[in-house]
Length: 83
Image (cartoon, rainbow, N blue to C red; front, top):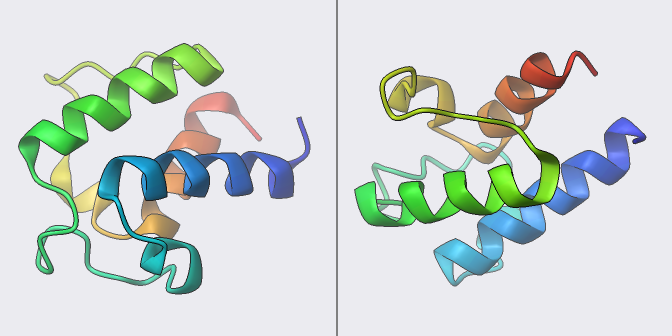
């Protein structure tokens, strides 16, 4: 998968869970500070990512800081996939 396509798909999943397109336009949006994501939406996003990409993100290894913005989520997932 091409990195740009991967990023676009992650952003689409995030927009779906967050119920806002703002995440598509602002990759540095502070998701938790602005209450775009909370614990329930984060779990929902993790499940969608696992289903879409086969990436396992266990709650035990999840760090809120590494998913603080859309850009950080993409970077973390790319690292996990070695993209």
